[in-house]
Length: 155
Image 1: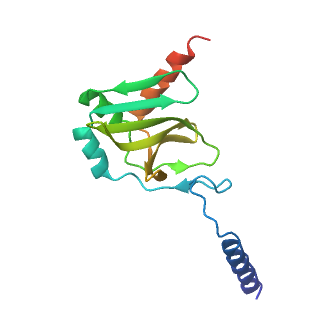
Image 2: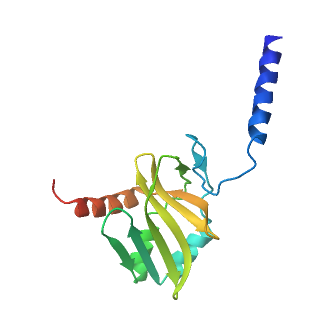
Image 3: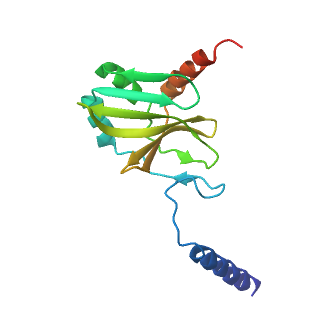
């Protein structure tokens, strides 16, 4: 009897909470304290970039550095920093930068770069909204970590 009562109360609370706000945020990290998950970017998109990208540009928000690559092997090394696993989007995490990939002067893919303890990876955009996420590989952690360490300099 108590179990049924608790279950009924739980279901009632759930229905009330679900119907209380009809607005949806486009920010995947908007839910208080609950990690959101976006699917991994489609492998075919990464393969296309790996074979065809002609330019990559990355800018960072808090440090005076940008990365520009126009040679396919360099761009392929950057793409190797993208894991096939999706990344949990922790609400407290903030993007440290943004990266764009071009093919013959046209922006093809873009993503926010995350490099914090709870979220290290990329959030990819589709039609101007977050659509995919990927963790960063160990190679990527070392690559970006080296850049940030060099900019920081000796303490």
